[in-house]
Length: 205
Image (cartoon, rainbow, N blue to C red):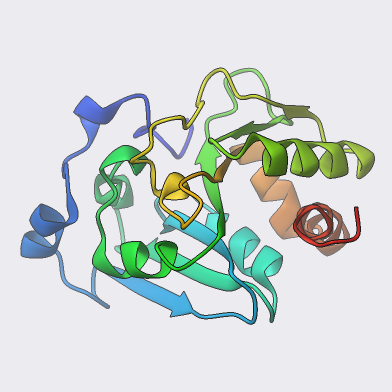
């Protein structure tokens, strides 16, 4: 069974439609934690459904951000039922997320999806199609299958958290659970994956 039953397209399944409701019932550092690190550039890497909500997205986001890029993680840390902490990206109004997003020029949001008979393809959406295509090109060169633009999760809503930066457009990566599991278990593969995205965000291409 896939670990993510609450996907962006299934808004009706979200227990919480906004963070005010979530915060009224859940306890910080008991049920969830929020990590914000301001980097040396105005690029932001986010895992809005990190921790145990969409498995391994936090670790992947951390690797991409490294020491230079800004990082935002919202992590489920409950012993069970972490998927109920999923607030869909178009409704994502967590105050710390909005604060750092609104002073970042480019945002790349790392999400997890079910394999759905496709355990390898990273699906790239968002309104920043130029950066999305650069990421797609570099991931292809690194040997990772991609779908861009992403038909299943297009992330074209202006309210999507990835599109809330100063440019009003960002990138959303939907990574299948099988690929995420491989990335975490294979440091070399994770280095290639993160390195491809880093290169796309740099001035090297």
